[in-house]
Length: 89
Image 1 (cartoon, rainbow, N blue to C red):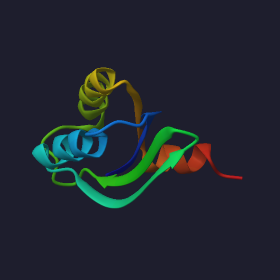
Image 2: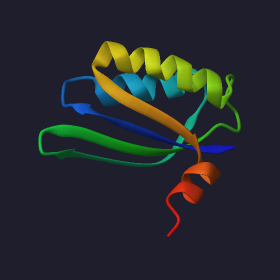
Image 3: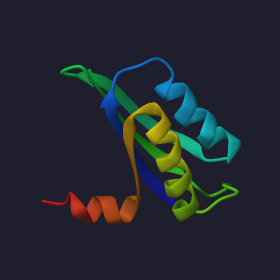
């Protein structure tokens, strides 16, 4: 299964490192990534693959929310199919 992970918040050192380290620790592959600073806000979107992950999307969502709180950012994890349907025109 694939998921879209978004990270938004104030820019600071270590956001990419913390999120990518969490994903690597749980064997979640980053398939594609986009990151920018928009009006002083850090914005990152990742397409991730949970095929070989040792946790499911719900557990990842909860754990990443805890990491996000420490970093002062917002993290959302959505199944790719749900994300695509939500953003279909």
